Length: 289
Image (cartoon, rainbow, N blue to C red; front, side, top):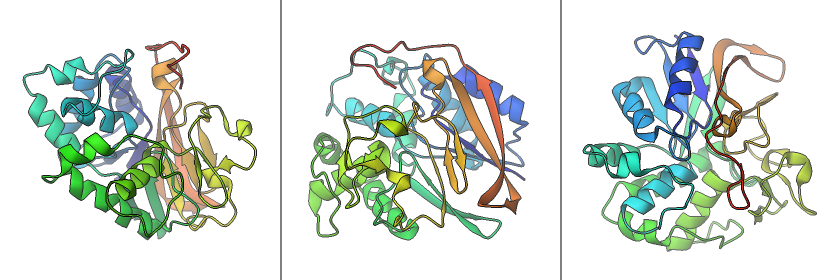
């Protein structure tokens, strides 16, 4: 039995199928965790969701910012962007089933592999959060998405405020802060203040900010953290950090990591599997990785 972690698919179903074949994945034996952004910008978002739904308990999926964007559009809380490729879900006869399945996915997962904690998120965490706190905060949003307040929440989800986490936050501001951290973070300040404008690689950190994982006091520093979301960062297998968004939709690779039971120096034993992807999206002034 193997555990495979897969980065941002973004509607690239053909590449996902090739990756699963290349990895030798078996639904009867193995488990997949997809790290969010299952849909949008690629050509076949509905096919991705249907494939994952058919896998049942063999596939565990996180919600990324694009997945939440789809749910917001479906509820009329957000207008589509010009680069969205979501009509194959929104106009599908099985739309309700696909959207219902997405609402029941997670924003963070915590597991144990070879006795080591493995935290799985779409984008990252702020330095002050422990792995257990991350799961608790994620659960707050998950419960709202699955309940009668989902429509109201999706209408209040967007915005960059509050820019810094505070345990005393309540209501929509608290939920928005959790979503922004788990699905949008790249750079933050030492006190957890978020910076959303910069989408370039780690070396482009604005003054006073670092990649969220580079703050030395980070409470998840001794936990293996797997994440996606940051295509300009690309593959990173540094100790107990696994960055798996390798820009599939931009003409890069779709990547999976097979985690083994053994432990190597600085982290879990892992095997990287990648397939090249045709470019489905070209950067413009608004559309950036």
